[in-house]
Image (cartoon, helix red, strand yellow):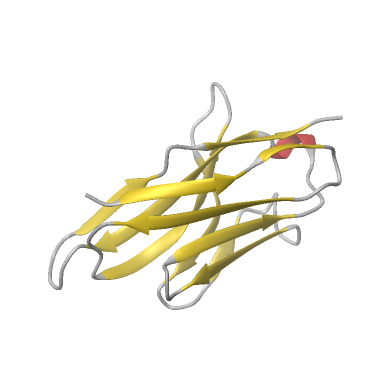
Length: 121
């Protein structure tokens, strides 16, 4: 069973910056997708930024130009740099992983425990 260890997040004023980091541990043969989702109370969990094994990245429209996702392939660590933060960026951010445990296996999903990001003056 793969576990995702998250770090970062916290409280920041509008216009400030925060970063999140996520590193998986466990048996992984290949990673297809790795990134971040955000959830606020009463709403579904939505994609914020994702990286793909092709090297491509995707961002939600609300964070384009402000957030940057990057992946360190040697450790499979994914980082989310969040700049010019806005109050509407507030929420719990979850690391997300789609991977293969072994060659020819089924694609599996894993979620981090969630990291609180609060943007408030």
